[in-house]
Length: 287
Image (cartoon, rainbow, N blue to C red; front, side, top):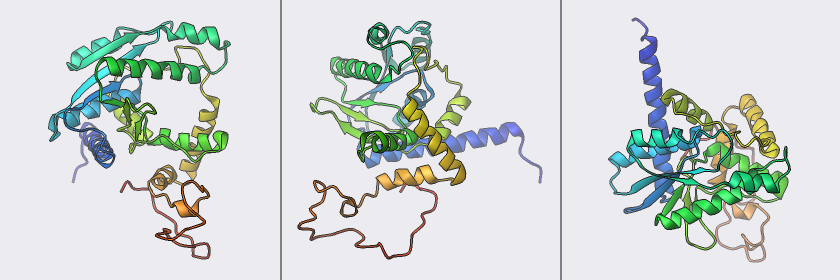
């Protein structure tokens, strides 16, 4: 039996990857009730692999979804020097998707406030978030879709533990404090390596993320490196960590606000398992 031609193998591999991403995005949407009938979903498009993949998969799912909803792509042109302002409008016009390009010179604001060479991500993120919420209100958006994936969520968990002393990650769905907006992360179940492969295969017109000239968030970089080393030594560990976020046992943590240790009663999950043999999970499968 002759081997399949390389082009055919490549096509088969891409189709499997595409179906897996579609399945994972669809499951996340269903598990967290992310998109409902009549929703106006604003997909925040940065020009990076994650947000391109998010829009691409959502467009595919929308075409066969049993409900009707609207997708509106939104890009914030922050006026970084060298930003290719024509790339995203041309791409979105070719797709035929509704879009909004917002021009706000946050670059100058950040440069004025943050010394050269220092990490600008925190201030830039706050400014960007405020603009996104404002535009969402203007466009009567019901859901704001961001391109954070499974690895982003796990990295954030460790960032908050190591540097903020909190057991907290990125939720797949978030209601803002003022109750005005709902933020969703449909890529929550998707691995970054799969998104990178998909992006390369689709040949998205990627815009570099270092146009502002700032240093990468060094703390996140350290966490990413730590997780990459773990994954190399123990394949499936990142997936297992994420799965742990979906299977929390409050009685076996130490948050008195989350669990009443004075009056335990009721279901205490797995009971006292300190003397039980360890249970080693296999690769973290999305349930």
